[in-house]
Length: 333
Image 1 (cartoon, rainbow, N blue to C red):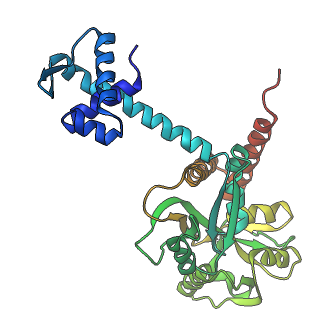
Image 2 (cartoon, rainbow, N blue to C red):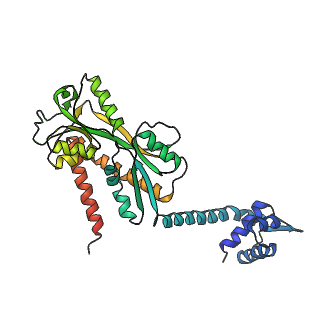
Image 3 (spheres, one colour):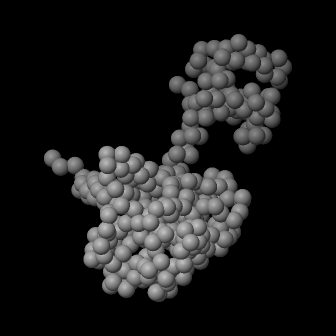
């Protein structure tokens, strides 16, 4: 039976134009290579070359073997690459950068499926003050992946769009929702707000929208992060604009969550340096993309059936959590 080494010898002679150059390329003795080819011909019961002195020229049978040999060796290389990637997915770490608008809590939630699949891969998550600093860290290689809102201040990074982040108005427990419909931002004059100092891009977006609505917001508190915003809301001190995932968490704790008119929305995704990612980072991107796509599709389906964005998100999250919980239990006999 022919073996891979014999096929490698055969293709080396074809591609390098003779035994001498093929032997040099493969770093083997000419006698070893010639013996391998003769053994291959004995096993096939066919000659593969016309022999004219020291030259070997493909005959018709040899020409028929070239493409199948290339396919076989190509499949072996591909299999080796896959297995190498599988080994690399068993250990190591992924360095991920994020920014205040893309909270570390949200990124941690989106990475849940990956961490269950690859529990030995460590995730190193860092937060940077703005998109420029985040992109600089990714460009320098200090972070393999960066979660950011778009646009970004450079054309030198690859982008993977994940969706649109919605900001909802989250109000203290017991606040009247009045009509139950979207809250008109033009009516925000008398609503005290808690603002995160670190979410600068988000604050600029909200300010720009309010300016178009001729609204000067009443800022009751400036706090360092989203969790402080949510704490003030739950304590009845102010309202805040929070992304959908945090808004659902605040709702479960008693806050009143309302959509706004006009909507406040920002595209977001992942950035990385050009070129292929290492297997762990590539798998992380694929898994996050799949989880978010599944969640967004379910939310859209529920909204299409008449649910509000908040109710659709609550139901989708409950269903996905239940599915993950059942999966983690494994099959039941």
